[in-house]
Image (tube, rainbow, N blue to C red; front, side, top):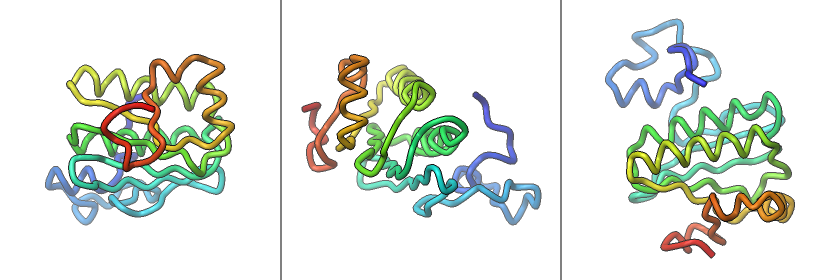
Length: 151
């Protein structure tokens, strides 16, 4: 799903030299890097820690809320860090759309010789990954400290 210009988080625009002050039509929901964005169903924040773009997610990644996850993945992928880590410790559920977003992001990153890791998924998410065998496709690590390889 391609984002329209008005949906691009402002951090991407600032990195490219076109800040929201230059574009009054920037979508109100766009948030700069490091700040939480989303709604009551799902919130996300993207930060860069060394060579890792870290996406922290809280809530339930299902239905319309997956748009927040997609925005966070787009922002993290644009950082050009070799690793994108998605922290799912505080995520209560991920539906097929949410897993689809993770798979598409991983595909995009692998094509760029980069990687996506799932960090510390909650028990329901870890179980869903196991039951669907997506834990084979999406490398899982216990925490950000374990970024050298899957567990």
